[in-house]
Image (cartoon, rainbow, N blue to C red; front, side, top):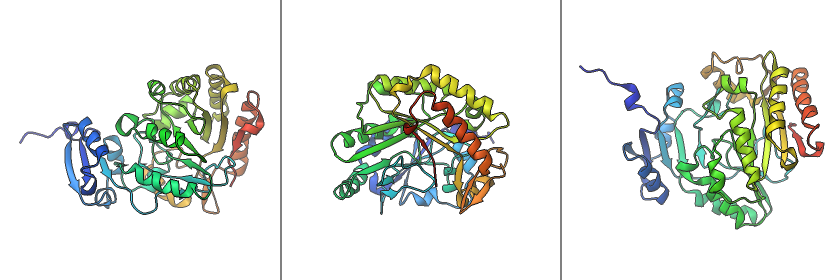
Length: 339
């Protein structure tokens, strides 16, 4: 018998699962048209595939399938304690995509989801409708890309452009789109708005290369951020999470020097600083799946259900980054995470 070529049968998005209820949705049709050779598999509910037991998540992350579904139930959630609110009283997040095309070893998604496949909720308008109801009560600060990287998926979903359109047409809403993407071509296609902040997670190149697999290089992210500001987009620089390594001071100093060379700090919207932290429930699963990761297996401290670096190390790393950034930007524009 002829042996099967696994690479042929398991390319990324070579299989697309489609919920029956969204088969006729315009976004479903648009996605399927992009992958004419993909095997299309009808399903009743995305959890029938995404939440199966004993999945090989590591293999799935290398060659994920795509699941097109409808998001149901509550669609907007209050912001988690381990996330930064940036001083906003009404802090929320939403997930229009579950899982990421990037493969960062320390990502909490590995502890949160039972699958490496990517779920795209095509019914974005339902999220908009729920958001409109909340906006009738009070303003909203909304993070829309905690559970994925929307910038990296923009050609597939068009969600970034849709979110920008919503922001332009509604008062009282400010969104954050966080990314590790390096694409500069998107700025020519998107229209900026001061209430849509693009946040670039920045890491030293060594950590990026060893732990943030598939992401854009530090130079690429900085080039992308600089180009965004040239086009009028608000840009936040996120030195979060800070990741420990034996020569962390040398690595982060080199990164900060590169940031200063490539970025006009006077144009930066603000800066986020925080060291790695994760809930104990997610960490338990993360350590099972990342047994060889030095980042994940570090002897963290568990305080009130949140794993973080020992206080002395955490404060030393964060204060060092803050002190360096204070050389270029007013301290009131630097947000350091506090529980």
